[in-house]
Length: 253
Image (cartoon, rainbow, N blue to C red):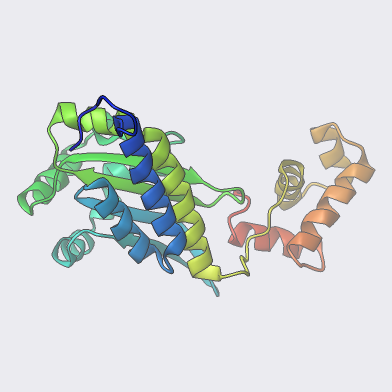
């Protein structure tokens, strides 16, 4: 590794090296056709053990399915699934509830979670981890996580140095995942905050006038928001739009 500082014109600083790593990883994601290819590129660029991308749900026909890509060995993935660890995994459980990136050392571990981590360590997985929660403009949630076998001080320095870049890479990876799933035809339209609010109250059986009073808007404005939401959802009536918005998890009741 190059020293942090060097004399002479053209010498690469630690900051330069960090920037080059990020640029290489970012360009690798852009060049990747699938998330599975991109996470390997990120792992290799940052010289870490493993990378995982997990979208909470996807819409495919009438079914919701998780979308997960990881560099963890198949033997561990199979064990993880067979043991039902996703139900007690603190990274997953807290990660999809958090808004900000977090070090796994911040997690609250139940006895079951401790047993999971012990099992993972016994199968050769490192305990240091860092996750970036992602919430996109249509409300989809995802989690981008890295895992490495470094001592505590080096790991702290690594995450501190690369935190901003990892957040950006996570969001770029998410865009690749959405494109991999849907191509140019993302089924989830972008509704504004007011459109969502009006749909939620419509879902609770409120009429235009009642919604207007609740949101302190004119009835005409409420009608406009609901019509706009209906058209974006490609529905012929409001009940149908509400049903589709719930199905796509644009709104939660």
